[in-house]
Length: 109
Image 1 (spheres, helix red, strand yellow):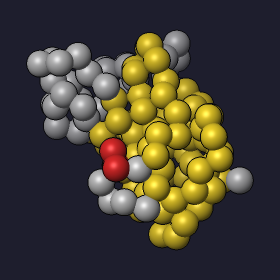
Image 2 (cartoon, rainbow, N blue to C red; image 1 turned 90 degrees about the vertical axis):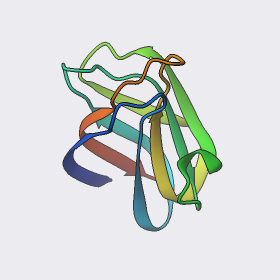
Image 3 (tube, rainbow, N blue to C red; image 1 turned 135 degrees about the vertical axis):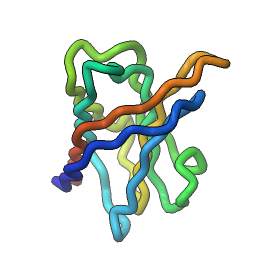
Image 4 (cartoon, rainbow, N blue to C red; image 1 turned 45 degrees about the horizontal axis):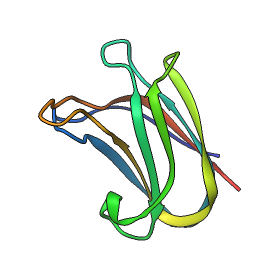
């Protein structure tokens, strides 16, 4: 498991995202995200691959709807590996919002 302790708030945008360089190619099993009451997590895409551009990487999984608590564990649909992991929150068109992450855990195989 790799843990990233930080508080991250994106600028308001239509598809706010967060990404991290894992430092080397890793096999990722799942991620656990801790959000905020101020802006609950919803409709998340998790991408993994070797490109610094998040959406150029393979889709690990898609979480639909709002999370029922402040934290959510998202398991990849398929076995993927990569150096960069990214979280994209899909917002409604023309409705900018912020992605707020209080903590992110990445679980490796």
